[in-house]
Image 1 (spheres, rainbow, N blue to C red):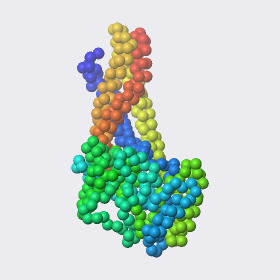
Image 2 (cartoon, rainbow, N blue to C red):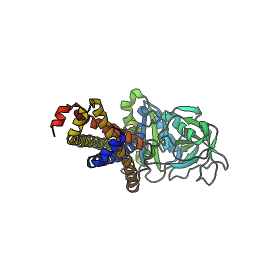
Image 3 (tube, one colour):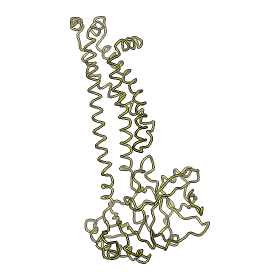
Image 4 (spheres, one colour):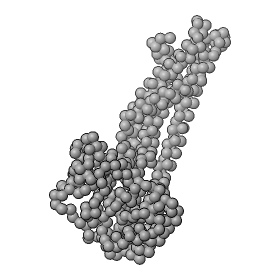
Length: 416
């Protein structure tokens, strides 16, 4: 049967095709947005951290009771932690992966003019303590560090006109400089009144940002290390790298050392949180995992309802056209011809449905953007959703089409 005749049949019997089309359109709109939401949830979970997560203990929720801790007290705390059996290194820090209580946001503009928002981590020796993979350049030199603190008075100023050394990730180097050639180049901060800029002295392979909601769409590694050591401060956190062979017992010793060294000077009722990075990461993504199970349930329900609906409607339509099938068989149509007819017919209906569904998907995404502050649906998800719906539609119609192809001509003509 020609395409024109097939379309003519669909126009004469428009109710069933319209129902299938509407069902496919709604399912396509839902699937496109669900696929996008799944990607948004999965991206931070799958992003490499770049650190030795199974060897890293994070310590935070530390605030001084009255006077800020001095730089000497912070240095002594680092030394005490390094002396704990099983500890390889320790660094006082501001801003650490999976530590959301202390965030440093900044903007950077690279040599190619691209501007990006990044998270900054501060602390002496973080490359070694975090176990970062330095792929180019070097770590900060001891005389390059300047003091930094929250609530203290020991912040050191940079020399006027001198660029600050900075360590960036490979992803930032690729985004901010043509060909990723960032080593030795200077980046600017559009919001910095001094305009001293940042000179790239090292590049690490990965370093996950601590704003996990932004760790998607290629932004997970938008993170930098600044040449700042923790000085006089009223807020404090530590990164501690331990020997993996002693990790089962070292956490308690680290907690005891922190309590002994800082417990009397911390705010009343506060207890420092001491736990491994991997535990923090599992806890941080708990809500994302729950959302993924919800999306999986929604997707499964949409798939089942769509497949069952197409099978039911197509099966009913096949039954209503038994005489037409019988006449075609009597005139010489083979089983393969009947099967191909229903597959082509369903493909046309489903393709029309996905065209409408893609429009519904964009409209639905607009509502989600307005009420839930979600990003815009990238166009690439539309053909993925359309292809999935086309595949499901063909699978759903296969059963009724095979039953129609098996009907003998004599049975079909006598069933009228």
